[in-house]
Length: 72
Image (tube, rainbow, N blue to C red):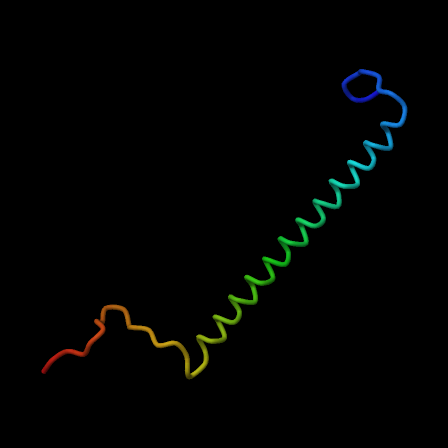
């Protein structure tokens, strides 16, 4: 008997078990993917932070200043 109260033919217990195993494997794979993405984002953020501290880096315009210098 299953959770709905109906009887099922013999052999479905193994089918249910295999479906459970497949779902558990899918969830584990998705979790591994999410961990990998999180680690990549952390590494990118760390690289950005360390690049901020270096003497030579990307040139950005200062806030409040235009692209060109002021004329005399």
